[in-house]
Image (cartoon, rainbow, N blue to C red; front, side):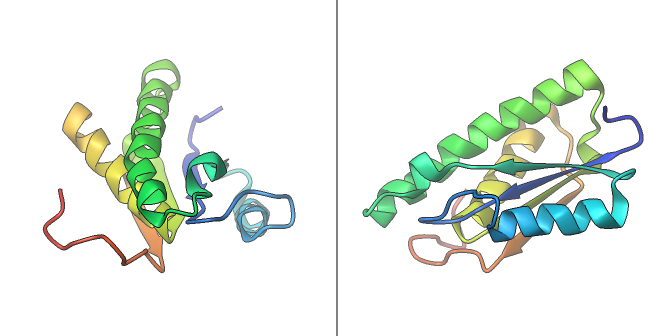
Length: 132
């Protein structure tokens, strides 16, 4: 499944969700039209954690979601030889922070680095430059 392919993980932001007519699906379709032989695309729908009226709670959930994604990516590496360098994380808003936390988790646990992390309009409220 992953032989000679790159994995792209797309993650939505605060108060958002996946649907077939969402930007997430549009992005997936464009990527696969350009290189279906090159890429495997997965979309993370964390809407259960992103749809809090309390932004602070959704923000806190970003670390939980990142831990789950990290465990998933580590299993892909172990079971299917997916190389971390062949992974591209793309996130919008709080999803951008999930991408960053996921990349940090992978490096902390494995000593390896994710190939690419792209933050699309990363959320600003309640995040600080010195946050680890």
